[in-house]
Length: 451
Image (cartoon, rainbow, N blue to C red; front, top):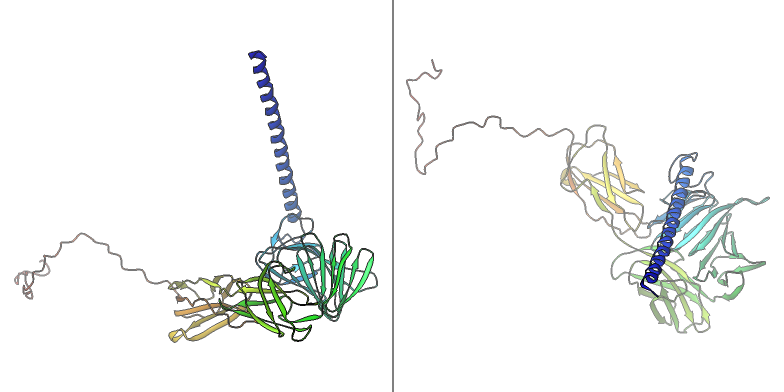
């Protein structure tokens, strides 16, 4: 091969590589334009929505309401691409999609009285079932994670995942959780439920459990002989210190047999954090940290269902405004505004303002669901203290972080004196021990008026 042919080969390879890179760049540009166009279309649809409110859940009559939410849970209405934050009390509508990230918590209350405790790391869709000749019922399509559904005496809840559908009627409780292989584990904890897997319909009673694969085939059916008594499934409690402990109780199984209690981070009890054995029916364990746990009990030839426990760090809300030692102007008719950093333990707060002598008189006390509050009332000038604490009915021991002390004024303070004339004769230095005589330096015969 001559040098010229070699150079031509190099040039051809460079040209082909350049053309290939140009094609890749053009394809990436088209992809970016497509994503941007879809985002603009979603924003336009949302802007043209009847209520005109960005982030409002889907239109029409609400299916459910958020009872409790912590940790950045988000939702997306049908026909939109924007994920928006969920707050306590927010309504949810037919086919709203909800994502609960790791470490978060969500409890839904449906309009018919059903409730759903949603595991962290879950993706689900809420729906309304309208069947001819039957009353309206609530439904959830679980796409990832897990859910504990509970029904009242007159409510119905259907939980679906793939080809598995579980229907709760009357006062019942069922947990449905998906593993990484998309197998559904259905565990009945209440009076019973009906489970449809493919073309089969199965009736399950209390403490019955099914493991169903993604094609709707039953892999395992169990009846647990050990009943878990406390804590309740989905119970939420505050962690009140490094040595905080949790008592577990159960019944059933063989009396006097060695019983193994397992606490883990996953519903399959594989990521174990505590494992203890006992011959009784109660055991108290120290949990290593706040978070979401699953627990169960095993004996030789006997098992229990798996239950979920949420332990939340008791982190008091941090006051922001008014700041300690601040002077706050509150004129007649104006509001005194309070702000604080939210607590991870709850979304309900109690705000108190103290004033009067030694700041010991209670001015007001209010419970609010947002990390801010505006008080409109008569507040005379003086020194005050305020506090905010998390409110949790299960653990009333929650305490305020601190009580900032501040001053309220009703009108502007007078300005400090301003020195206008600075051209003056400095005084002679004073000598230690020198006598100062009255009238010294004045001519007694001089006319004081200068005349």
